[in-house]
Length: 353
Image (cartoon, rainbow, N blue to C red; front, side, top):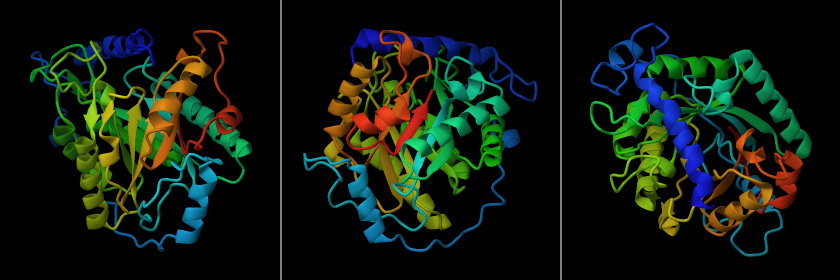
């Protein structure tokens, strides 16, 4: 994807996020202090995990799993799909038995995605409509709704620790969990580390990740390993970073008797993910490489082909932008049927922003 087409949405998000340092939380207290502290206080925002108990799930039907992998390869003849020698997931796995359709965003901003743009009831009704559209387009694959929440946001202000990121208060994450429960939806917590690291940010969310319905997303676009301010250039993750996350999630799964976690990795350039062949697959974690680029259909097709299809990991995702995808001719948002007809393999994770 051409950088000039990418920097605008990046900077737009960052400009939106700058005001977070001055906004108030749901309880009326300041989200940050005068020095720009970007860490949510755990003493008042601890998540409730008391209802989470260990459960047993029947083993995955390997024959059915393999047949669904072949189905989702969508007639691929390159030999890349389905990915060979991948482990059969633990019992309770969501993919590829269901397609996940998620709404993405942040409750503090109407500009970062549909999740925060509409009032909750209206947003959930719209999500329900998209779920029905995908079920109609592919009756063979049940659809699981989800809310994909940006829990750590890259921002233009350095903050007290100079990391250029803002951690959402736990009470905001709890609000998303409550909305998701009413819609029987999964929750994804997404992290934009900026000048921090995924090794520092991920452990903060372990209390939530112990919940069977909570999954994780990591965004290389805002992982600024060279010290650049977010928005100046596109960031990157290496396979080692992704392996750290999947290993961490796998340990949570095993310790708490959970079904496999889904790990979504956003991508729209080659350098956003390096050494993809070294990404480890585990029975406890299902890895989705999500095509995160926006633009006209031909541009999205090229991005999916070169950075998702040709660098296979395990599962694929596809992102649709209600506004950015229709900015240029043919001013057209791809429909579920068009996505399924035009892309190999079938994306099993769909995200709307």
